[in-house]
Amino acid sequence: MHDFFKSFRACDDGAVTVDWVVLTAALVGLPILVATVIGQSAADKSTEVGAQIATVTAVEF
Image (cartoon, rainbow, N blue to C red; front, side, top):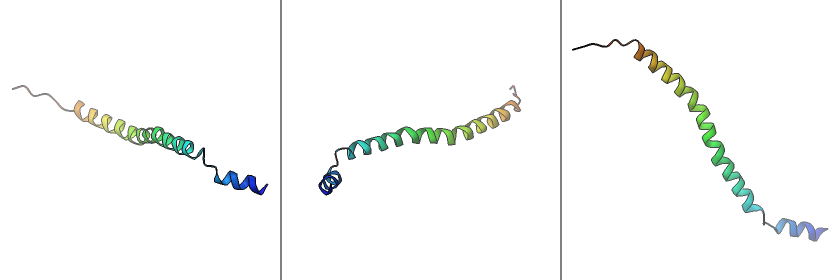
């Protein structure tokens, strides 16, 4: 049994796979997080700009 644990601890075949899975999850999750955080703020700001534009009157020369 001691040899099994010794060889299990020394085996690192799946370590690179785990690294790629974590990296891929970060690359997928980060843009979703950024879009969620910035999206609502951008929508609020665009509504505010639209309201300001609606109050402007055109002047003819």
